[in-house]
Length: 238
Image (cartoon, rainbow, N blue to C red; front, side, top):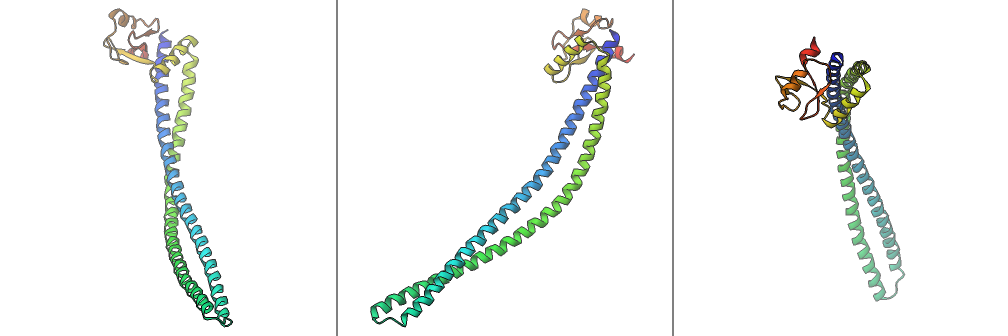
């Protein structure tokens, strides 16, 4: 049983180390994901600007088509003036021409406005693309460094798993069942040290008789307060 208690202490240390390594790995993976997300966001901004550019081009094209129609109408109306016989009809057509010319001026101004907006948008897109290129280079370097750390942690986790498997093989199934149940219930801490008459898991005083029985090491004893398995460090170290 003393050997079982020693193995339990070793197993708990291994599991806590593996838990810590997993936590560090998750943190690094979160950083990598955040870096990837920053690139995605930058690309999405460029995509939005590109969509705006397409919309401006379509709006400009529609204005140019309207301008072409009005210009053709003016030409036809001016040709009609030469054939008009009455003053009333002449005035009506002249008014149509005047309105059409006014509209063409407005359309031309709108087209110029769209051209200006498009050019400005292109400048913004070029700047953002340049920033994105620099960001991708910078992030690629950071991701490489982070991935190296992740790979190192994964190697340490794998080594921990090998050590854990060796410890588990030496422990009875009944003890392992209790151990894993306590791990789930007590946030990963199933085995704790008893020292100076207290449980270091919950910091509660242990009954003297129970504490003294730990020195014999002939059974797995649990804390009556937190139910964790108790070990004496000097027992596991000798």
